[in-house]
Structure formats: structure tokens, C-alpha cells
Length: 237
Image (tube, rainbow, N blue to C red):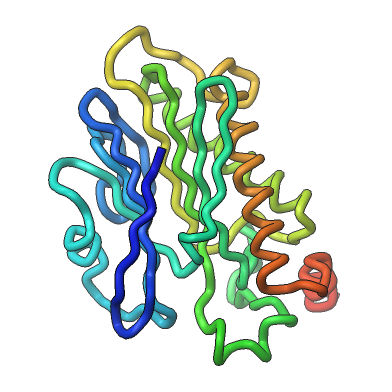
């Protein structure tokens, strides 16, 4: 499982989550560093400062990462508040930030809106969050199954957000990484009704649901996250 580390950067106390797999793994990821499909020895999820403005995020990730081949992603969400879930051999870790909940298929030209309840908190909570998800599966998977696994992870994330009361499919900067064993018989399917896809879906759903509830309690309580739904409806009407 991943280890948490702390650092000071730009005058702020930040955290990083490093999951070291070692040799014998490969991954599919949407991350800036190590994205695509390929061998992986570690996955890094690094928190950055509010208003992050570096134009070299890959170089920044490499400064924080260990040697070897890996995947690196950034988030403005609190990495210290990451959530974990396990199901039948699958492990999932999520960092959840929901200041700007986003529908994937929004009309062209319509801006995503931050939650109304947070507008007065810009001075203390000025950056949108991101939902980053890392999943480890202890079996080998074909390339097609890995692509299918990303679909399954995304569907489980959207289900969890809906159940938590958020009118969105995620945020505009979400990232995902699914790591699987490199050797052994390959699973051909990664959908939510396949053996390992179902386990991934349940683990991701639990991690994201717990993370969404924790984020709500930290940033919105005692307001209800259903207000996000009300705002979307108001803007649509």
C-alpha cells in the first residue's frame, strides 16, 4: 500500500502519496508522467499549492519521484485525506477534491461553476480539487482489459459521486491509474461484470464515496452537497 510523505514547498505544507510496486507490474494511466500503457514500478500522487502555476509539471513530478519507471499525477486536493478500499485482492486509493463538480457532457461554452457554498472561502480554500484514483490488481490483464478497467473505474467513480449527492461525473482534471501484474495468464475483460472488473468497481466506489463524504464534512458541513444539484438545476432553468 502507498506511503505518505510530507514536504514544504512555496511556503506551504504539502503531502505526497507514493505506491511502490517494484518490478513485475505494468499500468494504464491518464497521468502526465508515465501515461499510456507500460511497465511501472511506482505511482506518485503529489499535492501542489493552491494556484499552481508551474509550466513544467512533468519535470516537477520527476523532482519528487523515485528512480525507475513510474506514473506521476498532481492534485490540489488534500493528499493527507486520501481514502482506501479493498475488495477480493483489488486495492484502490483515492484523493477527492470537489470544489468544481463537473458534468462530462456540458454544453459548449458553458463554464464549470464552483460550489456556491465555497465562494466565500476563496481566501482559505482557493484551488479546485481533483479526483485521482490508483488501483492495483494482482493479475495480468490484456491491453483491451486495461482500457475496459479504466472505463469501469470511471463508472464506479461517477456512481459514488451521485450517491454522495453531487451532480457531476467528476472534475475536469481527474486522473486514473490501474496497475496489474505483468506476467501470468491475462484477463481478457475488465468490465463491471467480469470477476476483476467487479472487484475494481466495488473498491473504487467505496474509496471515492468515503472520500466524497470526508470532503463534504471538511468543506461543506453543515451544508448539504445536494445544494450542488440545486445550483446546476437553477443554472439550467
